[in-house]
Amino acid sequence: MLKKDIVEILALGLVVITIVGLPFAIILYDRYHVATHFPKNSQIINLTASAEPCVWTRDKIVGFNYWWKKFQFAKEIPIYDDGRPIFFRVKSADVLHSFAIPLYRIGPFDIKAGEVQAIELKTNKALRSTKYLCWQYCSECHPDLNGRLVVK
Amino acid sequence: MVDLFEKIPFLKKIVKLRAFQFAVIFPNFFLFYLFLIAALVGTPVGNRNIMIVFVWIFWWVMLIAFMVPFASRIWCTVCPLPIIGEWLQRRTLVKVREGSTIPGFKQEFFGLNKQWPKRWRNIWLQNIGFLLLACFSAHLVTRPIFSVFVLGGMIVLSTILALIYRFRAFCMYICPVSGFLGLYAMTSKLALRRKDKAVCDVHKGRECFLGSERSYPCSWFQNICTMDRNNYCGLCMECVKSCPDNNVGLFWRPFCSDVDIKGIDEAWKSFIMLCLAFVYSVNLLGPWGVLKDWANFTETGQWPGFILLALGIILLCMVIFPATYYLFIKWSKALSRSKNVTTKDLFIKYSYAFVPLGLLVWIAFSVPLIMINGSYIIAVISDPLGWGWNIFGTTHFPWKPLLPEWVPYIQIPLLLMGLFYSIKSLYKIGMKIFSEKEATVRSLIPMAILLSLITIVFLRLYVG
Ligand code: SF4
Ligand code: SF4
Ligand SMILES: [Cu+2]
Image (cartoon, rainbow over all chains, first blue to last red; front, side, top):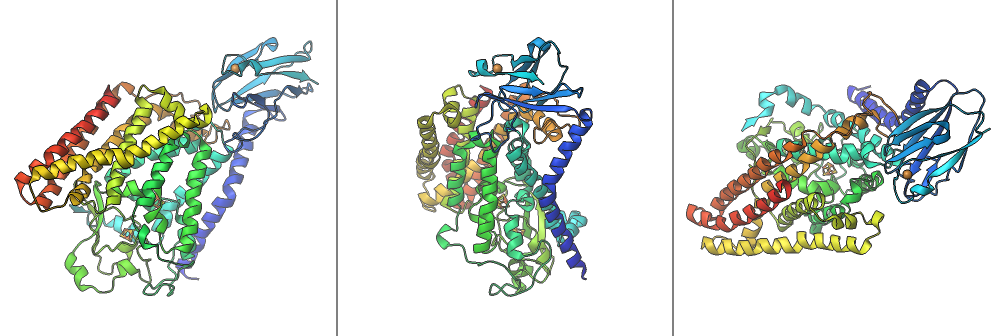
C-alpha cells in the first residue's frame, strides 16, 4: 500500500472514530464521574428546578427538550430506606433557585443556573414524608416549587 | 513586507504537506462536534454550556480581535463547517484523486459540479443572511439550541451545496460569516500573494488555479497570479502546494494594505457591519431595557416589538445609514471639484472608510465580552455540558470580571485607532482617484466629519 493511502485511511479512521465514539465517550465519562464521586451503590436522585416551565423534575432538562417537553413534576419522590447512601444532585435549568428539606435540616443550598449541587440525605425514621422546596424567591412560579419526599 | 515562508522555511514545509488542511481542521471538527452534542444534551443555560461560551465568547473574540486583523481568513483554513461537503466532493480527506470530471481540471469530483448562478456571484446573500441572523442574535448567544440550528444548518447547507455546485460555493456566496471575514481581512497584516509577477507571466501551466496531481484547484475560485486582495482567499494553501515555481508567498505587511472595495455588495457589507455594531452596543449598554425585551421576544412574548426592532435594524443598515453616507459623498464629490470619478464610484471606493473603523468598533465591543465573561471559559472547560463534571477542577471557578474598570481605557484607543486608519486609508484611496493632493484633501473633509461623528457616538456609548 502507498504511503498516501495509509494517511488517507488514518484520517478517515479518526473522523469515523470521532463521530461514533464521542457520544459514547461522553456517556462513559459521566458514569466514571458519578462512580468516583459517590459511594458505591448510592441512591442518586437527579432533581432539576425550572421556573419556566414551572417544575421540579427528575427528568433531564437539556438544550433540545427544554422548549417543548412536558416535564413530570416530582410531587412525590420515593426514597428507599435500605441503608444505601442517598444523594441528591440538584440543578437549575434557568434562574437561581435554592433547595431545602427544612424538617430534615437540609439546606438551603444555592442552586445556580447550569451547575450541579450534590447533597447528601440522611433519612429520619420519625418523618416518613416531608416537604422539599425552593427556598428563595426565584420567579413568579416560586410558590409552586415544592414537593414531598416519601421514605419507603 | 516580509515573506514568512522565506523567514520560516519550516512553515512552508508544513503547509505544503498534503495532510496540512486535514490536520488543522480535524481538531476543530472534533470540538464543533462536541459543541453540537453539548448544545443538544447539555444544560440549556447558555453561560454553562460550552457551545455558547466557546463559540460566542471565546471564538468570536479570537476571530474579530486576533485572527482577522493579524491572520486574515485563517479561520477559513481551520473551519470545520463546510468540510464534510468538501470531503464528499473530493471523496478523499487528504490525497488527491486524479480524474477529469470538470473540463480543464485534472481531478475527480463527486456531485453535479454545476457553476454557481452568475447573478448570485456576489455577497448579497451573505449580507442578507447575516442581517437576518443578527436580528435573532439575542437567542443565538444565550440559547444553545439556536446555535445548533444555525451551525448545524450551515453544515447541512454547505454539504448539500457542495454536492450540487462546484468547489466552495457555500463559503464564497452563502456563509454569513464569510462576508465580514472577507471585508475585514482587507485590513489584515497577513496576506497570501504571488511573489513575482514576471514568473507568473511566463508560466502557462496555471496549476495554482487548476490544481495538479498533488494539489486541488483553488476552491475559492481565486487566481493567485492576479489576486490582489484578501477578501476571497480562504488560505487553504492549495496554491502553495500547486505552484511549481515556488512563487507563492505569505506576506506580513502593514495594516490596511488592501483598500479597494470592488462592488456595491461589499460597500453594503461595510454599512451593515458598522450599523450592527451600533445596534448591539445600544442593546447591551444603552439605557433602553425595552429593546432587550423586544429582542428576547420568545421569553417576553413581545412579538410586535421584535418585528419593529428587526425592521428598524434592517432599515438602518440597508437604507438610513447608506442614505446618510450618500449625502456626505455628494458633498465630498462637490468639494473635490473633480471629474475623475462618478458619485457612484466614489460611493463604493470611499465605503472603505467603514472597514478599519468598523473592525475596531467590533473589537472595542468585544473587549468587555471577554473581560467580563471570560471566567465562564475557565469554568466550562471542566464541565462542558453542565452535567456536574469537574474534569480539570475548575467547574466552580467563580464568575469574576477581569479588571472591568480598565475596559474604557482599552476601548478609547481602539476606537481612535480605527478613526486614524480609516482616514489614513481614505487618503490613500483619494490620491489614487484624484491623483492630486488638494482635491483629495478637500474630498476628505466631509468624510472626516462623518467618521468623527461616528467615533463620537461610539465613544459616548462605551465610555459615557
Ligand atoms: S466561509 Fe464560512 S463556512 Fe467557509 S470556511 Fe470560512 S467561516 Fe467556514
Ligand atoms: S488563493 Fe490559494 S490559499 Fe487562497 S483560497 Fe485559493 S488556493 Fe487557497
Ligand atoms: Cu423559588
